[in-house]
Length: 131
View 1 (cartoon, rainbow, N blue to C red):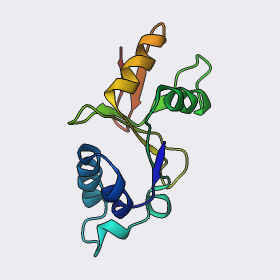
View 2 (view 1 turned 135 degrees about the vertical axis):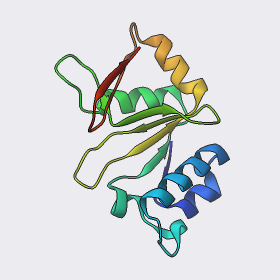
View 3 (view 1 turned 180 degrees about the vertical axis):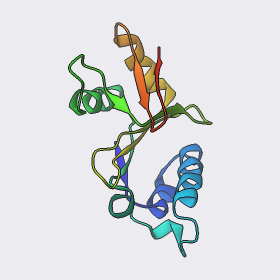
View 4 (view 1 turned 135 degrees about the horizontal axis):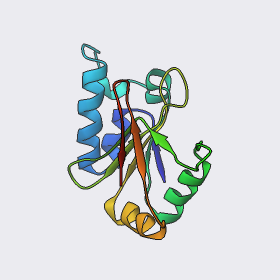
């Protein structure tokens, strides 16, 4: 698993599809910043960006995230982006939280291992349940 704290680090070591996605996201959040490549994700957005590379890493992350009484994990954002990466954001503090990019070959295997994979997306307007 690789950890990134700014776009400069991502540009040097991340697949292009999720670098492009995060660049657009950061540009939207910090429009007008002088150098987007140097903005610290942890200091400004409440968490690092993680590139999950194996099934074991993704399983470990899911096991360690906070869960409801029913065992569900609630993500503020969970979507498949261009290039097939699963983009996950979970707010862990007032500043934000970590972001996970998971390749399709990893999240599909983990999904098949779960008896009934469910992702709950919560936003300020509504709550949607996806199966």
